[in-house]
Amino acid sequence: MSELTDDFELAGVPDAFQRLWTPHRLAYIKGGQAQFNQGEEDCPFCLVPKRSDEESLIVHRGEHCYVVLNLFPYNPGHLLVCPYRHLPDYTDLSLEETAEFSALSQTAMTVLRRVSNPSGFNLGMNQGVTGGAGVAGHLHQHVVPRWGGDGNFLPIIAQTKAITQTLGEVREQVAQAWAEQPDRDAE
Image 1 (cartoon, rainbow, N blue to C red):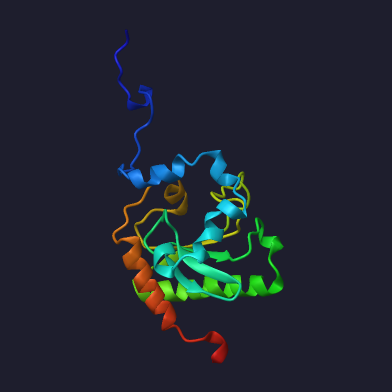
Image 2 (cartoon, rainbow, N blue to C red):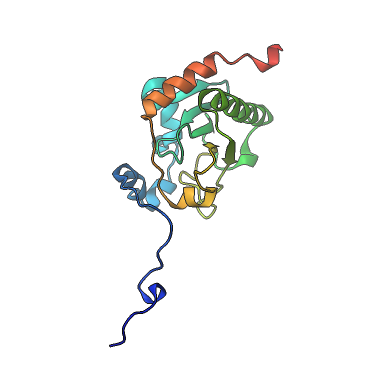
């Protein structure tokens, strides 16, 4: 039997990531393929607006879209902008929905800057199961606040991050800041 002289001969290559135990993410992982094929009756983004804002973590309700905290955040303050209608694709939005979807994404960034002073953002939509959508049947846009030293976006998708506040605390802060936000159309 040969003696191992190089770490690269071992099973796996060590990396610089610190591993965090996050059992709450197992609910998402164990959802399996069925979670990607939801109809309106069992779609989480169709159920969310039927509950109270506090229970569902909604921070703002618009006419065509709403903004909710991600139940499995990549970073504290990770928001999702969702249309009320159950649509799978960005091109399915009406012009009115598209305008509000975009405006709410902009306001989300403004509000998060006031609440937590991030140094950057990742905005994005994963379209379809192959495109990485966790809930492929209902369009949603991620608004992820970023800070220096929190890594780049790829490790955030692939790894679990430590979250420093409860979702309820973050929802309260963001909802309050959103309510204090001046109406852009009134200016």
